[in-house]
Length: 633
View 1 (cartoon, helix red, strand yellow):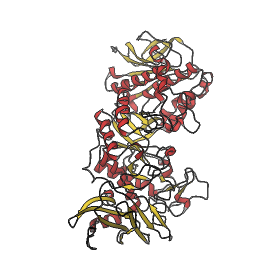
View 2 (tube, helix red, strand yellow):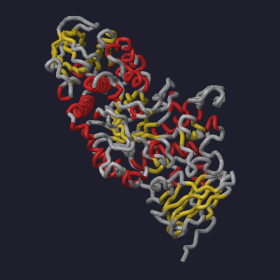
View 3 (cartoon, one colour):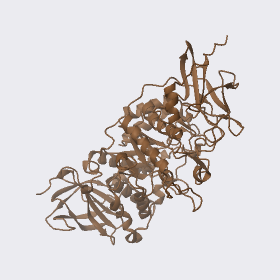
View 4 (cartoon, rainbow, N blue to C red):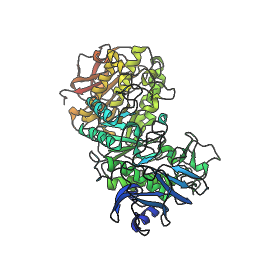
């Protein structure tokens, strides 16, 4: 016997919700749109709702009705079509048959689906009722706690089930989480986990913004993974892509037969670099969809932060467009006011509703105040990737040491602007794809020198002001470019030279976390001082990082040539004994074991504008960290 449907005047979406959705002010739109198990008029079933204001009709199709087209009702005041289906339940699959404004009927996936079929399938699944919001882990958003991020592509970190079997979230909870914690990282950052049809997009072309990809298991399994991250004392950051979406017909593209989520004008709505569509940030329902999504991942899964992809492409209307092929803003300029307002709104909502969640911007231009407070005219991000530092530093290490004297400025220029934003220093997946080779392959010299350069690069980064990010495989000194179709080359750890680099990364993480001078005043320009900045002829650099106390001081010395320098005198901020806290040339790391026998003595001999100095043995292609034992008066 077929259950009797509720009366026509019984609506799933009440008047207040309808008004909030129409105004784009619904704080949690996922609570009403999508599929929701509920009871109406005493009957158990599922309420379905989808926004498609220009559609001529929308029908619901699923395994609960034999995949027949069951007409839905339009709520004209908010452009939402809804239907309550008695007897439908958790686990049922469904799609929307949208008869669009263009006269075509297209089977569409639910934009608010919380679980989807394994690609290439694209049906949505009715999920369990939404849970009580979870609280993100962590301390205050604007602290100077250490942040060492391990960036991971979930599908290719390790494949315990076989080379052609995707790891599950439970696999990753069991293996990735203790591995990252054991190496001393503070955060795991996952490349986008939103559902995406094209695996080789690595998640950067998502179609299901509210659904963790089915490639690794169910939403509950992903929730268990997040809980495992937190249980290990780590925090989790997700890459998030609100800049654009793919053109797949089953997804958001021309969703109701019109340009609904995207701009109608391709000069605004089509991304030439990625052949994707650009969200219409000026449409308040679209902005509501995206702002709600940011809050959703924090509240429903307990995610600790979002790294926002391709921010530069959002900020500028002429991004990657020649003259005459972009639409100026209302003032005739290139800034995208609507996208700027959207980013500020995201941060206002997160700061109010989830103040412990952080955001990071992948932003490659000089746009001002990316990490400035919204109330002060900034975008509101907590951190910004320092792409300039990354490009300059990698370009320097690619140079043969004999030529490095002519590129010395690439190692010093970052300190000119280091305090303009709150930066993350990224050695990310972007640097090991599309023919760029691995980080190791970028280094100059023979294999021994390449590994020495790589160790020096890592120690330089960990001492330089800014948070830290390493893409998976960097700790193995992977010689080949990242391959998303295979796991990392774990066999390399059988070679002491590669295992030594992994040990260095472990020691760098722990040293960074345990040493206040390297993080506690990370945004304070008085916490940094150049000691040797102009010795281009020897490719030697030195600087001091200062904590709150004298014994917190760390001096960092780099010798970026293969020449061992004996008796090389460098000025120091304190007298007395200095212990060699870290030496990248140590034998345990695969180096030649040249050094200072663990300590040096600073005497009262002024040099480099310092009262004290010491004579050092500088190992080849190396970085030293030193700390005072008993500072002199």
